[in-house]
Image (cartoon, rainbow, N blue to C red; front, side, top):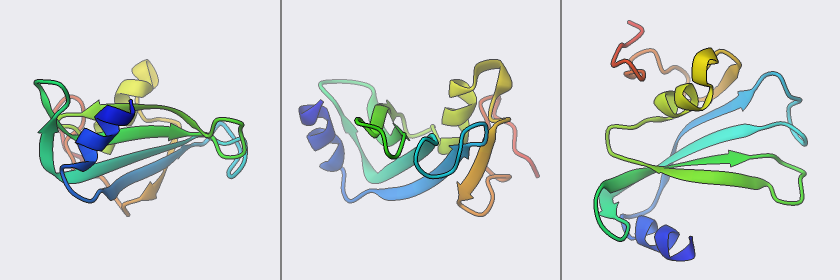
Length: 114
């Protein structure tokens, strides 16, 4: 994992593009947060496909706050990521922290909320 993260961050400094919280759990310690970072240049981690997004699930206050992470291709975004994670519930239980809105972002079906 360290090698993949090192390769990922070779794509440049990351920007927090998306943050949300599972509304079924408490805010702060014991809650679950979803953070999606992007680097400016897509990179290959031991071969194709190229990635430039990194989604991280975090539970503050736990012994292992970073629960897991997943890389994303350039077409991915934080909205698609939480929709995939939520399966049939999509992003229903997510409280958006940032950005202010994602209504212009394509969802997993390629639709935008305009």
